Length: 212
Image (cartoon, rainbow, N blue to C red):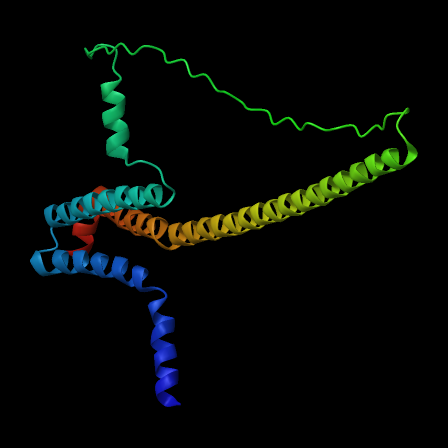
Protein backbone atom coordinates (compact mmCIF):
# COMPACT_ATOMS: atom_id res chain seq x y z
CA UNK A 1 0.00 0.00 0.00
CA UNK A 2 2.82 2.39 0.84
CA UNK A 3 4.71 1.58 -2.37
CA UNK A 4 1.57 2.19 -4.44
CA UNK A 5 1.09 5.57 -2.78
CA UNK A 6 4.74 6.45 -3.41
CA UNK A 7 4.40 5.62 -7.10
CA UNK A 8 1.30 7.78 -7.33
CA UNK A 9 3.16 10.60 -5.61
CA UNK A 10 6.06 10.47 -8.05
CA UNK A 11 3.65 10.21 -10.96
CA UNK A 12 1.89 13.30 -9.65
CA UNK A 13 5.20 15.14 -9.44
CA UNK A 14 6.11 14.02 -12.96
CA UNK A 15 3.16 15.88 -14.48
CA UNK A 16 5.23 19.08 -14.25
CA UNK A 17 8.54 17.60 -15.42
CA UNK A 18 8.84 20.10 -18.28
CA UNK A 19 8.49 22.96 -15.81
CA UNK A 20 11.21 21.42 -13.66
CA UNK A 21 13.47 21.21 -16.72
CA UNK A 22 12.87 24.85 -17.58
CA UNK A 23 13.52 25.95 -13.99
CA UNK A 24 16.68 23.80 -13.86
CA UNK A 25 18.28 25.70 -16.73
CA UNK A 26 17.30 29.03 -15.20
CA UNK A 27 18.85 27.99 -11.89
CA UNK A 28 21.94 26.80 -13.76
CA UNK A 29 22.25 30.23 -15.34
CA UNK A 30 21.97 31.98 -11.99
CA UNK A 31 24.51 29.55 -10.53
CA UNK A 32 26.99 30.41 -13.28
CA UNK A 33 26.51 34.11 -12.61
CA UNK A 34 27.06 33.64 -8.88
CA UNK A 35 30.02 31.28 -9.23
CA UNK A 36 31.92 33.39 -11.76
CA UNK A 37 31.92 36.92 -10.38
CA UNK A 38 28.32 38.26 -10.59
CA UNK A 39 29.55 41.00 -12.91
CA UNK A 40 27.55 42.88 -15.48
CA UNK A 41 29.33 41.02 -18.28
CA UNK A 42 28.54 37.55 -16.90
CA UNK A 43 24.89 38.48 -16.30
CA UNK A 44 24.59 39.81 -19.85
CA UNK A 45 26.24 36.72 -21.37
CA UNK A 46 24.03 34.32 -19.39
CA UNK A 47 20.99 36.34 -20.45
CA UNK A 48 22.12 36.15 -24.07
CA UNK A 49 22.58 32.38 -23.79
CA UNK A 50 19.07 31.97 -22.34
CA UNK A 51 17.65 34.12 -25.13
CA UNK A 52 19.30 32.01 -27.82
CA UNK A 53 18.25 28.80 -26.08
CA UNK A 54 14.68 30.06 -25.68
CA UNK A 55 14.42 31.21 -29.30
CA UNK A 56 15.66 27.89 -30.59
CA UNK A 57 13.26 26.00 -28.33
CA UNK A 58 10.30 28.09 -29.49
CA UNK A 59 11.19 27.39 -33.13
CA UNK A 60 11.55 23.69 -32.33
CA UNK A 61 8.14 23.61 -30.62
CA UNK A 62 6.49 25.34 -33.58
CA UNK A 63 8.07 22.82 -35.96
CA UNK A 64 6.81 19.90 -33.85
CA UNK A 65 3.29 21.37 -33.77
CA UNK A 66 3.27 21.88 -37.55
CA UNK A 67 4.48 18.32 -38.09
CA UNK A 68 1.76 16.91 -35.82
CA UNK A 69 -0.91 18.62 -37.89
CA UNK A 70 0.59 17.51 -41.19
CA UNK A 71 2.01 20.85 -42.28
CA UNK A 72 5.34 20.97 -44.14
CA UNK A 73 8.43 22.20 -42.29
CA UNK A 74 9.27 25.89 -42.35
CA UNK A 75 12.51 25.16 -44.19
CA UNK A 76 10.67 23.49 -47.07
CA UNK A 77 8.23 26.40 -47.27
CA UNK A 78 11.14 28.84 -47.46
CA UNK A 79 12.84 26.75 -50.15
CA UNK A 80 9.62 26.53 -52.18
CA UNK A 81 9.12 30.30 -51.87
CA UNK A 82 12.65 30.99 -53.11
CA UNK A 83 12.21 28.64 -56.06
CA UNK A 84 9.07 30.50 -57.13
CA UNK A 85 10.96 33.78 -57.40
CA UNK A 86 10.17 35.39 -60.80
CA UNK A 87 13.83 36.38 -61.26
CA UNK A 88 14.97 32.76 -61.11
CA UNK A 89 15.37 31.03 -64.47
CA UNK A 90 13.66 27.69 -64.61
CA UNK A 91 13.55 25.19 -67.49
CA UNK A 92 10.22 25.05 -69.27
CA UNK A 93 8.65 21.73 -70.02
CA UNK A 94 5.95 21.46 -72.67
CA UNK A 95 3.46 18.77 -71.96
CA UNK A 96 0.67 18.10 -74.46
CA UNK A 97 -2.77 18.12 -73.09
CA UNK A 98 -4.17 14.65 -72.89
CA UNK A 99 -7.74 13.99 -73.89
CA UNK A 100 -9.37 11.23 -71.97
CA UNK A 101 -12.50 9.76 -73.38
CA UNK A 102 -14.67 7.84 -71.02
CA UNK A 103 -16.96 5.22 -72.39
CA UNK A 104 -20.05 4.53 -70.39
CA UNK A 105 -21.88 1.37 -71.02
CA UNK A 106 -25.55 1.42 -70.43
CA UNK A 107 -27.20 -1.83 -69.58
CA UNK A 108 -30.42 -2.21 -71.40
CA UNK A 109 -32.91 -4.80 -70.32
CA UNK A 110 -34.94 -6.27 -73.07
CA UNK A 111 -38.36 -7.28 -72.04
CA UNK A 112 -40.79 -9.41 -73.89
CA UNK A 113 -44.42 -8.57 -73.99
CA UNK A 114 -46.41 -11.72 -73.57
CA UNK A 115 -49.46 -10.74 -75.51
CA UNK A 116 -51.34 -13.75 -76.79
CA UNK A 117 -52.67 -13.87 -80.29
CA UNK A 118 -56.36 -13.01 -80.19
CA UNK A 119 -57.07 -15.50 -82.93
CA UNK A 120 -55.28 -18.38 -81.15
CA UNK A 121 -57.24 -21.07 -79.31
CA UNK A 122 -58.05 -20.46 -75.65
CA UNK A 123 -55.74 -23.22 -74.40
CA UNK A 124 -52.78 -21.78 -76.32
CA UNK A 125 -53.57 -18.27 -75.07
CA UNK A 126 -53.66 -19.53 -71.45
CA UNK A 127 -50.30 -21.28 -71.86
CA UNK A 128 -48.88 -18.07 -73.32
CA UNK A 129 -50.10 -16.08 -70.33
CA UNK A 130 -48.74 -18.72 -67.88
CA UNK A 131 -45.28 -18.48 -69.46
CA UNK A 132 -45.48 -14.71 -69.15
CA UNK A 133 -46.41 -14.98 -65.47
CA UNK A 134 -43.51 -17.35 -64.80
CA UNK A 135 -41.10 -14.98 -66.50
CA UNK A 136 -42.56 -12.08 -64.54
CA UNK A 137 -42.12 -13.95 -61.25
CA UNK A 138 -38.50 -14.75 -62.11
CA UNK A 139 -37.79 -11.13 -62.89
CA UNK A 140 -39.46 -9.97 -59.70
CA UNK A 141 -37.34 -12.43 -57.71
CA UNK A 142 -34.22 -11.20 -59.51
CA UNK A 143 -35.15 -7.58 -58.81
CA UNK A 144 -35.70 -8.36 -55.13
CA UNK A 145 -32.34 -10.13 -54.95
CA UNK A 146 -30.63 -7.16 -56.62
CA UNK A 147 -32.30 -4.73 -54.23
CA UNK A 148 -31.16 -6.84 -51.27
CA UNK A 149 -27.57 -6.94 -52.59
CA UNK A 150 -27.49 -3.20 -53.22
CA UNK A 151 -28.94 -2.57 -49.76
CA UNK A 152 -26.28 -4.77 -48.20
CA UNK A 153 -23.51 -3.02 -50.18
CA UNK A 154 -24.87 0.41 -49.22
CA UNK A 155 -25.07 -0.60 -45.57
CA UNK A 156 -21.47 -1.83 -45.71
CA UNK A 157 -20.31 1.44 -47.28
CA UNK A 158 -22.15 3.50 -44.67
CA UNK A 159 -20.68 1.37 -41.89
CA UNK A 160 -17.18 1.70 -43.36
CA UNK A 161 -17.54 5.46 -43.71
CA UNK A 162 -18.76 5.70 -40.12
CA UNK A 163 -15.75 3.77 -38.88
CA UNK A 164 -13.43 5.87 -41.03
CA UNK A 165 -14.90 9.06 -39.55
CA UNK A 166 -14.55 7.69 -36.03
CA UNK A 167 -10.90 6.83 -36.72
CA UNK A 168 -10.34 10.31 -38.19
CA UNK A 169 -11.90 11.90 -35.10
CA UNK A 170 -9.62 9.85 -32.88
CA UNK A 171 -6.60 10.93 -34.92
CA UNK A 172 -7.66 14.57 -34.61
CA UNK A 173 -8.10 14.24 -30.86
CA UNK A 174 -4.71 12.53 -30.60
CA UNK A 175 -3.12 15.32 -32.63
CA UNK A 176 -4.73 17.97 -30.43
CA UNK A 177 -3.62 16.16 -27.29
CA UNK A 178 -0.10 15.72 -28.65
CA UNK A 179 0.11 19.37 -29.64
CA UNK A 180 -1.06 20.49 -26.21
CA UNK A 181 1.51 18.30 -24.47
CA UNK A 182 4.26 18.38 -27.08
CA UNK A 183 5.08 21.33 -29.28
CA UNK A 184 3.11 23.88 -27.29
CA UNK A 185 4.78 22.85 -24.02
CA UNK A 186 8.21 23.03 -25.63
CA UNK A 187 7.41 26.50 -26.95
CA UNK A 188 6.27 27.53 -23.45
CA UNK A 189 9.63 26.43 -22.03
CA UNK A 190 11.41 28.45 -24.70
CA UNK A 191 9.25 31.46 -23.92
CA UNK A 192 10.23 31.21 -20.23
CA UNK A 193 13.95 31.04 -21.06
CA UNK A 194 13.56 33.93 -23.49
CA UNK A 195 11.75 36.00 -20.87
CA UNK A 196 14.41 35.42 -18.22
CA UNK A 197 17.19 36.05 -20.74
CA UNK A 198 15.71 39.38 -21.78
CA UNK A 199 15.41 40.48 -18.15
CA UNK A 200 19.03 39.50 -17.41
CA UNK A 201 20.37 41.23 -20.51
CA UNK A 202 18.31 44.38 -20.00
CA UNK A 203 18.97 44.85 -16.28
CA UNK A 204 22.50 43.46 -16.20
CA UNK A 205 24.03 46.65 -14.72
CA UNK A 206 21.39 47.00 -12.04
CA UNK A 207 21.67 43.33 -11.08
CA UNK A 208 25.47 43.57 -10.97
CA UNK A 209 25.28 46.51 -8.54
CA UNK A 210 22.69 44.65 -6.49
CA UNK A 211 24.81 41.50 -6.23
CA UNK A 212 28.09 43.35 -5.64
